Amino acid sequence: MIIDAHAHIQELIGSSWNSPPERLISLMDRAGIDKAIVMTYSDMPGSDSELLRYVAEATQEYPARLIGFARLNPGYGPLSEELLVLAITKMGMKGLKLHPVGYGIHPGNEVTIKLIKKAAEFNAPTLFHCGDEEYTLPLQIAEAAKKCSEATIILGHMGGYFHVQDAIRVAEKYPNIILETSAMPYPYLIRETVDRIGPERVLFASDGPGCDPLLERKKVELANLSKKEIELIFSENIIKILEKVKKY
Image (cartoon, rainbow, N blue to C red; front, side):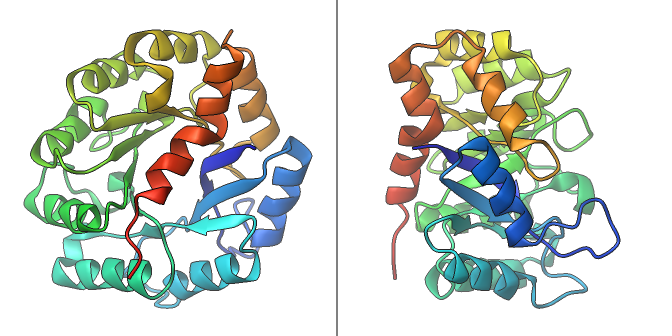
């Protein structure tokens, strides 16, 4: 079994980022990926009030292939918290996605912390975009991990191109941090991450369709991992995280 811990669906007609569920599933089939956690490119609340429903309907249409996460802007405070609760309790979603580049709020800001803590009440993980841009750096997200020790914090892209070592260091310091492999181009750093924090705290992801899921899979397979390490990273770790999410 291979589960992609970070992928996208959203119809953006005329854009190369146009990602209806069928496009992602086609790429998953090509890459031999069984299931994917999906979220939109846009934050909610936003101009399209139906985006959460869009994700929910896609996961209902393809329940064997897609798992929903709610991508939210914490700047809306209580409204974002209400949408998160709705997404988890009524729409079957399993986690929270935060992309601070878009809304420009530091990960350690009080409004972000409140939203992460709300997710943690359901044992739902929080997936951060963690790359090379301001507000997404590993040392900045570490402030959220420190203030929300009860939360599972996933660093999507594990620091991007230039901040992977910082991502590994903060994961060594904070046991609630998990690193995720998508869009980080160095197989040898996946091997180093496993050696330093253990294979149980690494997740496979593609960030597809923006990145090629087949290429992202091959990258992990080139990291000189054992059979058991590959099994943990490709599916067993994320299954354990998702199984803990409370159902109401």
